[in-house]
Amino acid sequence: MTARPSHTIERIGIDESGKGDYFGPLVIAAVFVDATTQGELRLMQVRDSKKISDGRILEMAPDIKTICPHSIIAIGPQKYNELYAKIKNLNRLLAWGHAKALENLLERGTTCERAISDQFGDERLILNALQEKGRTIMLEQRTKAESDFAVAAASILARAEFLSRLKRLSSEVGTTLPKGASPAVGLAAKMIIKKHGQARLGLVAKLHFKTTQSVLAGLT
Image (cartoon, rainbow, N blue to C red; front, side, top):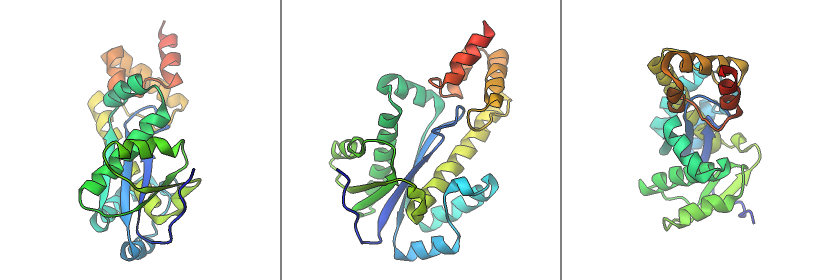
């Protein structure tokens, strides 16, 4: 059952980045917003990160971090692959990350009774994960939740962290790691295997994607 929306303006927005990207981490961000910071986010023209260029996202993120209490959970490819092998379900993995980001923000002294996230699965997965830690919060899941300033701010922080880490991983393997899951992604994966061996792929990519099977099949 979906929790009833609250009319209090104070809320925590949660969003993730990297879920559909073969390379790079899965990043979940939680951002606390009140009446004052909402006005500042409006002036900054904060909106869904998908509607903002990468360059602008990287410029906006430090300003959002300065004015809003926040928490960022980055699950690098190696850790992601370990967790996925145990959990074997992306929604459960996402719920774990959402709960962790929320928990970290609440542990830092942020008091808030309401959180908003995108509709991605069974909200009980998040609530149960929080309750195991003795946390209770009203969770509101919405479609197009990024229209809310708190969720939009979280989407920008998550994307900025994703972009920074993807760039770092690209430097480490000496190959530009493309975003998404396009044909260019498959070519980059082949290049990594050719340069560093198959084992290195698990340090930069989410191995359960179909891209892995098609790349490895193409090498035989």
